[in-house]
Each structure stands twice: as C-alpha cells, then as structure tokens.
Length: 154
Image (cartoon, rainbow, N blue to C red; front, side, top):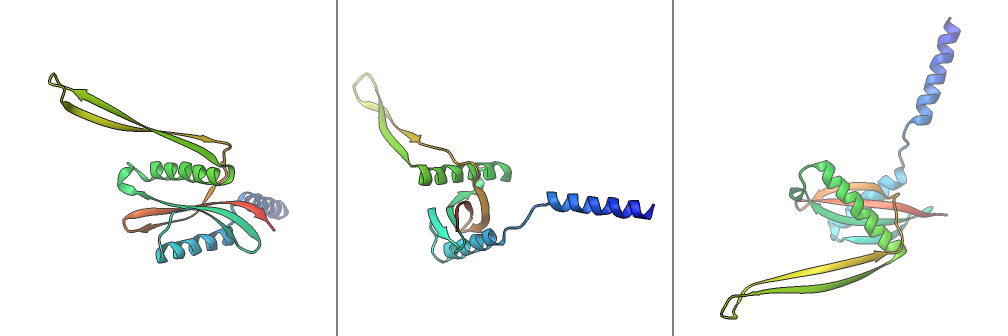
C-alpha cells in the first residue's frame, strides 16, 4: 500500500512538472532592460535586440488606460498592435492614404459645413502570431507595453 502511494505521488509530481510553465529569465531581463531604456529616454517602435545567445524583435508602445473600458480589452488591443508592428518589421507593408473633403453649401453658395476624412489602406505581406509580452509598466499616465518575438538562436 505504501509502495503504491509512493509510485502514485511520484507519477503525479512528474505530470505536474512536465505541464508547468517555465520562466524565461532572458526575456524577463530583456523586458527590464527595455523598461530602463524607456524611462531614461522614451521611445516607441520596433527594434532588433541581441542578447548574445538569441536575437529578438522587440515592439515598444504605449496606450492610454482611459481609452479602454477594462484591462482585458486594453491587453487585447496591445497584443494585436504588437503583432502588427512586428509583422510590418519582418515582412514589410505598403501604406496608401487619401484625403476626402466633403463640403456642404447653403442657398447663397456659402460653405456651411466642411468635413475632412482620411482613408488609410495598408497591405501587408505576412502575419506574425507568436509575439509575447516581455514587460508592461506605467509611465506618465500611460501603460507602456514591451512585446517581443525570438527570431534567431545562436
């Protein structure tokens, strides 16, 4: 009976260990490094970073918390934006824009209302889905996100 309990507990421990998440300290350190860089001199965009063993594409941007009803929707927007930024960096994109002016006249041919609408169209060559969050932090009332994707292991 004792032998069965030991075997069962051993198997449960192995199963729990094999399905547990691992912590990637290299990515955490990279996220902290980018945070220190941002706090020293704020920037946004995509950069290629090399840790010595691995190369990463890192996307850094900020979002205003007040523009989103809850944290879940802000995190979803952040994930989509990071995927878009990294995809543009890796695959390229073509952006075209047009400005449409709408004018309304009254009976005396005077302009009553004018509206300007900008139409932006983007064509991308590919898609990236495996971008993961490295860090997020508050800075000047904004939430700054640091997302990245491993692109090359040396």
